Amino acid sequence: MGNTTSKVQNNWGWFLALGILMIIGGSTAFFAPFMVSLVVEVIVGVFFVVAGITMLVQVFTTDDGWDARITYLILGVFNTFAGLMLLFRPLEGLMALTLVMITAFFVNGLLRIAVGVMARPEAGSGWVIFGGAISVLASIYLVTVYPEVSVTLLGIVAGVSLVSEGAGYVRFAFGLKNGVSVAV
Image (cartoon, rainbow, N blue to C red):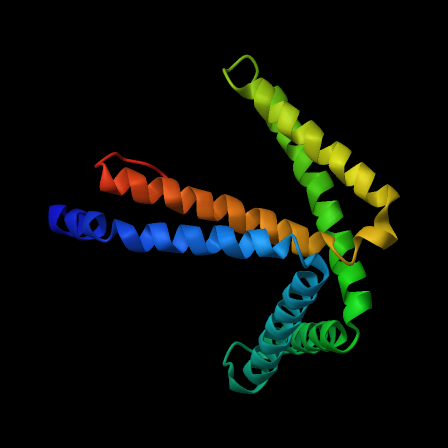
């Protein structure tokens, strides 16, 4: 185990480079959020099509019985259709994915508020409630500006995600370099 740790520590520069590249990529996403949103939407569409075709192949290759075959057939047709709709109707796909994301923000916020309330009086539970409230308020705001925000929201979220993940890798790299245990 120690040998593996030293190999990872010796390669801290690769983690640093990955982090810097992610930060640069995320930062550039802020300058072209519409294009990044389209790229994300196309990637999601391709995954749906691949998953759907895989399920359709399982209809003919599984030994699980007719119930499983019917399930694979329904899911395969649905996923393939959804993926093709995302690929051939990109603007409508952006609107649909944006609604899904706004709903996810809202539900995630409500769940975090509930977890924070249940964790009372533990230290940090107030921050969990605060973070949940921010998610709920952000989702309410996004619904009020919904049609307009749908063409850029995915790109902005992808940019924020890349920058924050990149910062985590940079922190991890310097932790490895200095022999300090740091979670990504």
